[in-house]
Length: 313
Image (cartoon, rainbow, N blue to C red; front, side, top):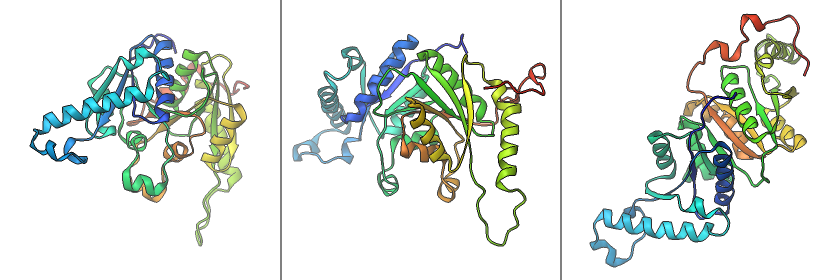
């Protein structure tokens, strides 16, 4: 866990109360990691917003520069006195759509995480105006940390893992953040009931699925846990409900999930667990991107570690 260098933190901000939470969390993370914290605000292209009649004679870049100056003043006024002055001193205002601006800033590097304030959007709202957080979950190449209105510091972390290659990176990220904050860590897997498909014989029943899931976890996931005092467990039921219940029971301040980056067809038909948990946002949430198959050794124990006995947790 130790020895991995932390990269600078990027915080996306606007004039909303949620941005206060985002800056406070991002600043606490950066201070703990000993890295810079950059605040970035995105303002639309000047031609996309209403303008006064006299501005039509101005050149587009002059309009954008004026819009950035006005946006900077508005953000500073909204956050002043609520976040550290040093954080506001690092404010950058860029022109463009929020998700694209933050993604470009992360790619410019170096950057280790993007932090956003969590906002609850209805499904219709996301279809009509989109959501910066949901867009970044699908496209960001570094972790996304979405803040919720929960007290700091972070003392309890829950990591929700599945049975795929995402389990390794998710567990590694959860251990790293728990270590940074000196927090307790609990690793959770939720076994969902099998879907009912009419006129289709089931090859497995729920008990068989539960037993196979537990066997996989005991062989390939739980032995990879290295964080001192970390615990693990299973729940049955809908994944979102199980994760939310675990967070509430443990009063966790942070939940960690992996994102598989599913295509839009998958999200329309079956949705994304990560996006559904993001919609519920039971606490601050770290989304770890899994861009492709990972090294097998990340999710499976080395030969020397394998044993017929599973460590008690």
